[in-house]
Amino acid sequence: MSEPIIRLQNVNKWYGQFHVLKDLNLEVAPSERIVICGPSGSGKSTMIRCINRLEEHQEGQIVVDGTELTNDLKQIETIRRDVGMVFQHFNLFPHMTVLENLTLGPVWVLKRPKAEAEATAMKYLERVRIPDQANKFPGQLSGGQQQRVAIARSLCMNPKIMLFDEPTSALDPEMVKEVLDVMVELARETGMTMLCVTHEMGFARKVADRVIFMDHGEIIEQNAPDAFFDNPQNERTKLFLSQIL
Ligand code: ADP
Ligand code: MG
Image (cartoon, rainbow, N blue to C red; front, side, top):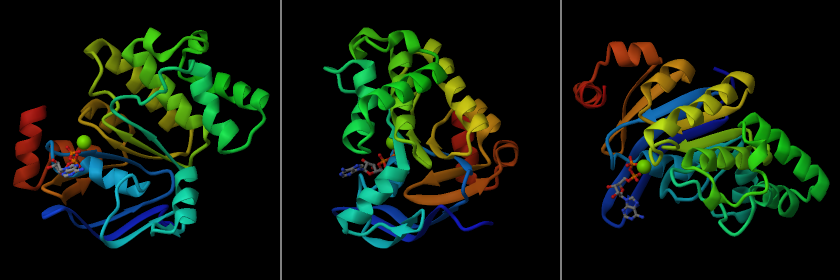
């Protein structure tokens, strides 16, 4: 494996007394696509939120693109420039138009000229197939459209790594596909490293290089998607898959 772009080494985290991440070890290669699944409460969100320091780990080491996550704010800032995140609930700014949502980071954080940021924003809105929504407010869009705006907003920051935390689980069923299609395209057309928490197994089979199963704060099993779904080894994985498939 080439030098990993993300490395977790013996990572432990507690919420008070509750041991939420237990000795996690994970190496992600550049351009690798990983799907993370597991029961609710198993620590999936906590793990990926630790990668861009939305949560702090207490033990072990997390290194992202050569920078270790410590309390050093400069290092956190460096890592956040490399890492985009898409949440379950979109997290768009409701009082700003779609275009303003997309140009805010590039203009204020990356110091890009406004015209350039707008051109880039339109490019990504075309990529997620909603250029015609640029001047609307998030509240005027469907859930699927809002999530595509959120994906485009992350892409405008030109990240090396994208983290997705159940990006389709708050959507009505008819909107899931339009968001997954955009993500599949993104995976196929860019070399971006992707970590995605999802239970969308069709997506995992199409896109993932590796599926990771978490339970009770531990990585229990991991494998290439076909092997993972067709021939799970661990009893807990089997039980989980029997409940979702
Ligand atoms: P998942 O994403 O796999 O559903 P989470 O990472 O969100 O799991 O949560 C793992 C466990 O940690 C759950 O039991 C949850 O209740 C608990 N937890 C999550 N966030 C907090 C928090 N901020 N404070 C205390 N407990 C938390
Ligand atoms: Mg979660």
